[in-house]
Image (cartoon, rainbow, N blue to C red; front, side):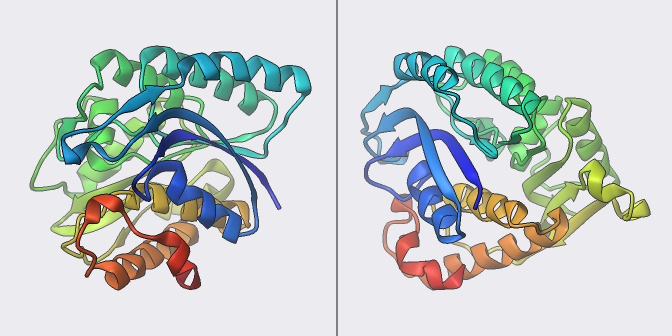
Length: 277
């Protein structure tokens, strides 16, 4: 059993963010703790929402944990709500990595070629710093483009362009990287590059892609579900390529089972689907 810290938002009326990740990682046999970046009433797509940033709480909590000697086997970072939060978390992750903690960074900033409302270019720059201390980072295609100053192409990439994008992600300092929601040579896929510990046996196949058939339902929180499943498999000893393939399959099954739900903004009720994990 691994000790995992999640740094992400808590949404009151939707299975997204930490609400989606906690039951998955617990079901996989890990002890899960949390540091919320904000309390959010509901996903922003409803048009009306309330947000309580927890920057002050984070600022006060981290030194308390350090004084108490709390240790984690892994930390996964998600949505940040301010530049100060990004700086705090980047510094904390840098220290944890120096102590042997595995650092997973989900650089949540945008989708569909655009940044989310409220995300600034300064936060993009700070997220590059956070990615630089990651053992594994897994942006979507939009976020990878912003992080690497790569032009976003709505029609997708060639495999050579995908390889260059992965190289650019590694140049930021991450030990390994995935890019989700990609389109390569006309197929939707996840692309990735193996960590140094797995590259020695991979030869020319250190970079890989896993194709999948996109299901036309836009559930909120599927990225968080992907993150939790992936991290759980990795911490249970599966290599990156196998963990990614297994995660893609499970997420597809989760979407397929719940595609009939009338309000995709509320996400997938993951507690009712643990049998698929």
